[in-house]
Length: 315
Picture (tube, rainbow, N blue to C red):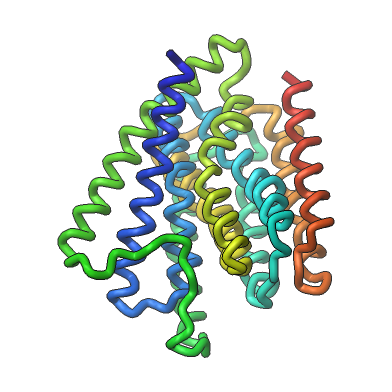
């Protein structure tokens, strides 16, 4: 029953996140927002919605281990497992802007997350700082879009089919439906995860790092896999990096902003360092020929396998 509740909640989260991207992207296209900004904000926000809602719900339900473990595990899975699988499908091209601006922002966000959590407690004011960084990031992306010289007719595949023929009121209703699905899906998902942790005899943090993190990363896996098969690999990598940034700024920012959260000792001793290691690993991979080759994908997937083995053996 616990596993069924977990799967039902996950399905609601994934489908609602996809609906959110579809309808929000349609409104953005109608508003003539540049495709690159849609990819780095709406798509990243949409694919991060399960992580955000799952972490917020876990914090509200008194499961901080799931909330924090979910973000750490998802960020590791995004850059090791999902980027690795994407590269195995098709080598991932690296845009210069990802090296010059997006990766540094992601790594800085990761460092800030670790610094705030290292004393064993995420305070509400620290969550507020992380959440405020979301608006700074959006402002930076908007400023960068003003300098974007991409030809107007060159459209970027967003990984979803916008419903441009629908009126705005219909699109807004779809966004409302998606938000409701995210709300109830997160409730079912976290209830199932916390009960599963109790029945399996493991901590909330470990469940957050593994089952919850992998489940909430499924939208990134689908989006990146489809983008790779369509040879839109720059969107795949940009979406993964963007999702990692929003996971920290939004999922942790909102969760800690609502209620202070204690940090599991395992996260401080091991998991944070794995998150930073994986984030650091991809920089030289991106810089080398500006291409994530298949052999690099093998290294990334192997790294994730080692990490999960360490987590499981450490329980």
